[in-house]
Image 1 (spheres, rainbow, N blue to C red):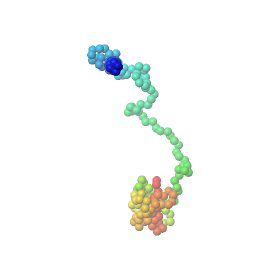
Image 2 (spheres, one colour):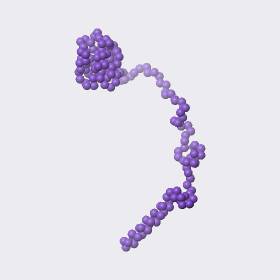
Image 3 (spheres, rainbow, N blue to C red):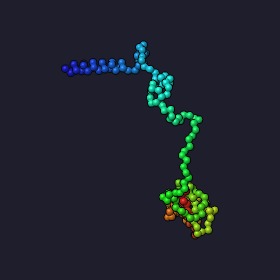
Amino acid sequence: MHLRRTGTLLCAAAALTVVLGACGDSDSSTASGGSSSAVDTTDVAASAAPGSSSTPGPALDPDAPSTTDPNAEAVPGPQLPPATAVPPSKQGPNIVGTRCDTANGPEGALRVVVFPGGSAGCDVVMPVAKKYGPMISTGRNQTVDGWSCGPSQSAGVLAKCTRGSDSFGLIPQ
């Protein structure tokens, strides 16, 4: 009984293989001399007009922008009115003092501001600021050319250096 079932299954598998093999690739039928009804779609796509119903795939939109035209003009962005006021939540702190040049900090340029109350000018503090700027990232107090520098407790001032009555700060731009 088992042999009879196994034989039937083998015959069914062989028949299925023959049927699936006949449905295969059209090149095998043309190689053996038979005719093929397959159409080369590249010739049809090249000769068909864009947007026609015989073109395979999605239709092309004639109004869609083209990115392949090297002579295409750039379109300018929107013309926005100039800003007249900065909202309070976006305003930086108002730091009083003499604005000097910038010094390199741990994450970019920092503006150097000489605070009022001393006699030192930008020419005196800038060399110190340029030496101390990269050291700010240590987060520790440093002595640079006789100036005591360290993190600042003032809003908007990243670091502050003092020497006697003179002081200056480094603020993010």
